[in-house]
Image 1 (cartoon, rainbow, N blue to C red):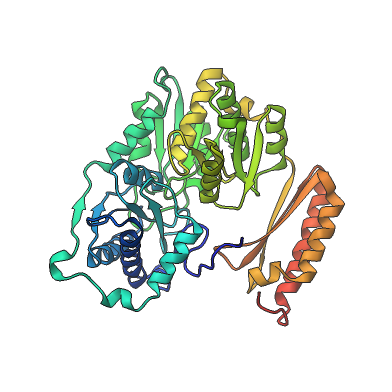
Image 2: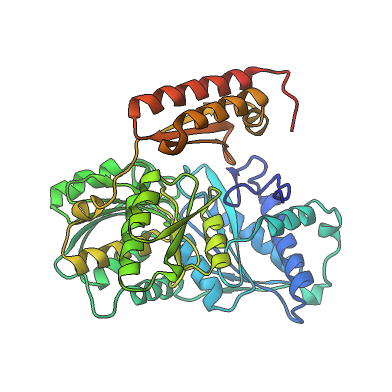
Length: 463
C-alpha cells in the first residue's frame, strides 16, 4: 500500500524558512487547531486535550510556540509549555506527564532561519503518515477557524516545571546503575542548541570530566560552525584535552556524531553494530534483530550476520525505524546519521543516550572506541545529490529506472544501488556501495549523469 499524500509534512514534520510558507505563524496556529480537533475526534476524551509544547534555541521558537498554543487553546485544548528542551526530552515529557500529544519546534541541524514542527503521540512516538495526512486535511478545512468552542470553553496555558531536570534524571537512569564515568574525559559540543543545559549536566553528574563547546545560544548561532555538522571543531578539542570521547550533537540533540580519542569520526553504523553486539552479549537484544534504514552500509549487515543478528531495513527517517521496531517487537535500531533508538529507554533518537550507551561499552570492555569500532568493516560507499526540479518524477522516469536496474545487475550480491528522491530538498540522492571503490565511483557518476539528464527533460510527465 502506498503512503498517503502529504504536502506539508516531510520526512520529519513540517519544515521551512521562517516567514515563508509553510513555516509561518498561520501554519503553526492552524496545526495547533487541527491537532486539538483530531485528539477530540479520535480519543473522545471527555475533557480538554492536553498538549505539551517545547522548542530549541532558535529566535523564531517563541513566535511559533505562541501561535501553536493559540491554535490549541482556541479549540479548547490545554497547553503545557516546556522550557528549551531536546526533541527526545520533549518526547519523554509527553509520555511522563500523561499528555495526549507533544509538539516540538525545531529544525534539527538546519540554520537558525529555518524551523520545524514535529508531533508526538501520547506515548512519545512520532506520528505515522496516515495521521499526518489527516492533520493536513483538517488544516485545509475552512471550518476549522470558524467553528470554535464558546468563550467559557477555551483552553489554558501552563508552565511545566523543571522539564530539563526531569530529562536529565531519565538519561542517568538509562546508564548502568553499577557504573559511573569517573576517570573519563569527554568533549561535548552542544551546537548552541536544545541540549546546552541538559547534556553537560548528565555527563558531569555521572562523574566525567567534561569540556563543553557550543553552550552559549543566542537565537542565531544554533549549528553555526559547531555541532554535528562541524565535527572537526570537536575533534580539535579532543586532541587538545586528550579526551577519551568526543560527542557532537545537532541542534535538537536527537542524534550525535561520536569521535574516538584520535579525533576521528566513528561512523554511525559502527556505533549501531557495537550497541547491538553488546546488547546481544548481555542477552538484552530482543529477537536478536535490529532495524536500520536503506542507507546503512552493507558492512553493518555482514558484521551483524556474523554475530547472529538480523538486520531489518526501513525507509529513511528515524520514525520509520521506530515503527518497525514496534511492529516486530524489537528494542534497538537507528540510522547511520547517528539517530539511535533504544526503545527500552526512549521512544525516539537521542544523541546523549547514544553516547552514554557507547561509554558503557567502553567502560565494560576497557577498550577505546577506536578498537571497538574496528570490529566492523565498512564497504566503500558513494553518495551524490543530484539537483532536479521534480525529484519524484525524475526518479521514476523510465530512463533512470532502467539505468538503476542495469547497475544493480552488474554489482549483483557484491554491492548495492539506491536511488531516492529527497523529502526535504529538490534533489535525487544517488548511493552506490560495494567492494571495489573505483568501480562504484564510476557507477555512481554514471547514474548521477542519467538522473541529471532526466531531470532536465521537460517532457517527463508528472507521476
